[in-house]
Every structure is written in structure tokens, then in C-alpha cells.
Image (cartoon, rainbow, N blue to C red; front, side):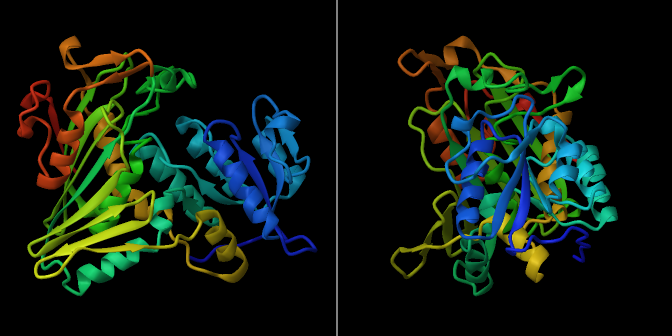
Length: 395
């Protein structure tokens, strides 16, 4: 990708950054920017929030960046070269395009948009402006991803038969009160699509598609969804999706935020002579194959903001450009177009008072079984997942 950089680097060689959305998950970005600032790579020039951060909210070492609720004006006044956008999902496209029109490069949090149309508007606008855009699927910066692809190409597990993904997490009821848009499918007539597969466990979907070699929109031929909820929300918290891809393989990802015993999410590559399991938050890989003992590996990771800086200063290749999230966005679109999630019967879940969260008994095993068998919940015999809850979308 050729990008045009019309903004200069300061005399110290550091790249100035504006962070839009510095609370919630934005706190992670603040700490990451501080890490890179300590290395002399970047400088936090500005923070865009509706309510300015207090001095106590800004990590030590970041100084006193300029603050404003006006994103465009802040980009102008700071002369920032990069904007990190970690704001509510429905705002992503407009903020990204604001940055692009000003020649500012972008790190855009996942999911990049709440619909495929908004995604295309963002991606096409960014391309027309000739600025760089990185989508924040941090797991795709792991060195485990190319290592797994190499194992597959070498035939370590024989012929690949499919890809499974599993995420069994827990979230308290307060999680859905963290922001007005939390747990919503739409708000004030605008798409949000804040569901388990599209936001908290979106990495499982994107990583599974990447390991299958099917990351672009045209790689998806069919999508089946089962969307359910135990919590009192609009969106889904216990769901699964099966994607049929152009290479003929199926990718099935099952996820819940109502786990009995929450664990690390993972993606498994199934072969006819073995399997590769990738715990993507830990960059840990387990290779199991016929005639060999289990082999476990741990890998490093390239930070996506640092990769973006290296791209605009040294020409390094971007790791997660918008187009390689096109297949993921097709999944988001299928979930957007699906019927509203089915509420689980009261007999299917119970409240853990000490943790103030809802639990679906047996769901941990179902999530793992879906990743193992590439089957949907209803096909695994879940009493609360009826076959007609599956929504099929041809793309």
C-alpha cells in the first residue's frame, strides 16, 4: 500500500499521536502509547474525550497532552501524524474519515464498523485519501500466525479439514451498563451490533479466518448464525457462527460471556493427521500430530501501533489493513441482518450473586465441542438452541 504523509516528524524523530477515546479500553492504548513514548518512538500530543481526563487519569510520563472534544480541531492544532480511534463502534467510520481527510494515519479499534456498508465507506475513503489504516486485531500481529501457516504449508497436520474457535468468558451484569451503547444492536436508529462475536470475542473470529487463509470479503460464500442471550440486553452473549469459505473449508466459532469456568480463548486448525491449537491472547501454540508427542511453542508479537509507526517512517508492511478484515465484516453483517437474538429460558441460566453475573450451565463444554466438531449449538443438542434459530446468509 502506498501512503502519502503530509505531516512532518518533530525534531526528535518521534511521531505525534492523538488518542480518541481514552477511557474504558482506551486506557490500554494510553499505557501502550506510554510504552512507545518511553522508547522515544511516539509522543502523545492530544486526547479527544467528551469530558477531559483528569491529571490522575493520565499515566505518569505522558505529560500534559492537549485535550478537546473536537477531534478534527485537535488533529489540526497538534499536527498529529497518527490517530488512534477507540470510541463507540458507530463513530468509527466518521472519525476515521475525518482523520483521513486531514492526511492523518489511523489505528482503528475493532470492530472497524457496525455494518459492511459503513466498513466499505471507511475503507474506500481511507484509500482515496492515501493514508495508512491499521485495524486493531492485535492477535494478527502475533508471530504465531505466520508460524502456524508455515506448519500447515509443510503438511505438519496433513490436509486441513476446518478451523474452530472457542471463547468462554464471563462478564458481570454491570458490563452492559458500562456505556449507553453496550449490549445494543441499534441505538437511536443507528447500528451498534455489540455482540459477543463482533466485539469482546471478535479476535476469535478474525483469527480463525486468518488461519484459514480467508480474510477478504470475497473469501466468504455462506454464513450461518445462532444468536442467543442470557442477559437482559438487545444483543447476543452466547452465540456461534459457521462460515463456509471459497477454499471449501468451514470455520466455526462459538463464544459466550456466561461461562461457568472462564478460560483462555483459542483457535484450532484441524487436519486429517493432527491439529494445531492457538491460544491467541497468550501467543501460545500446541501442535499435536500422528506419530509425534505434543509440541508446544510460544511466540513474540508485533504491536500494531508500532507497526503503523514503522510503516509511515520506514515503509514496513502493514499487518492488518482494512481489506484483510473484509471476511470478518461479512460475519458482522450476517449478525446485523439476523433476527434479534433469542432469549434463553429462565431455566437455562442462573445468577451468581457473589459475581453478579449470569451463567449458562454446560455452555463451556458446548463452546469447546463446537470448535472441535465445527457444529452449531443446535446440532450439538443444546436444549435451548433450536434449529430454527440458525440464520443462513449467502454472500
